[in-house]
Length: 325
Ligand code: 2P0
Image (cartoon, rainbow, N blue to C red; front, top):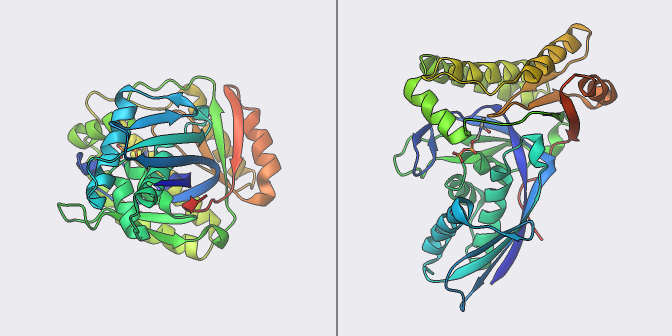
């Protein structure tokens, strides 16, 4: 009972930042992302009758502790759905996500685990069902089921049955590019889980963040549909700034930005003043992702590489959704 699946990571243009239910991973707002071809996880799940517990290997190394626990808890959900509670598995995962690039490998990781695990145990889930399951491993992973642009609908039911991602436009719809700008100092003191929890519970700006999301979503979906790059980029950049503003108004306050983060943000804004359409977005860490168009690739890459504190720039195109190998 073995299956292998591949999933790509995604970058949120409208951020997921807050949970209304931590156990089920139910968000306080819809989010929207672009799946990226440059960063992916490949996972093989093999359920075997003779095993007495799950085994998890990441990049050929056995994993124990919290990460193993998170995988086992997720496999419990799959076993529950299949009615095979006593069937354990070996899980082999390979991450083609440069950790330094500041992408959470949890998005591609849980999407690949959900796809391979359900197939291996003999479940046939459609994409909404797979996304709903994947969400319970890691929220942002629910969007990685699809290629191109996807929206995670928060839903409003308490059991989470209406909280899953839907496709907005496939990878082939629009060739926008993303540069992952890697900074020399990437230490992060507040995890995204802890950061969003503290923000929901204490930030004076949290209600403003939530109130602003519906308009951002309507406008960015229209901009994606009509391939309006300036509009897409400016909404994404402003949404990112709002998310990060909530952390400054939390108690205790915190920020994911470093000095080099600010330098990259200012350089991107400066590129725009020079006529190059480029926009930034930042997740729960100091690294910056820059959206640009293919014709500006050389200029954008060179400009970003010249910023003090930048150690690498990794380029990516829109990526595909889940595939089975
Ligand atoms: C996002 N982030 O929309 C946002 C933007 C970080 C900033 O999703 O607790 O690893 O596993 O649901 O998905 C990071 O959070 O959190 C994240 P869990 P996840 O991509």
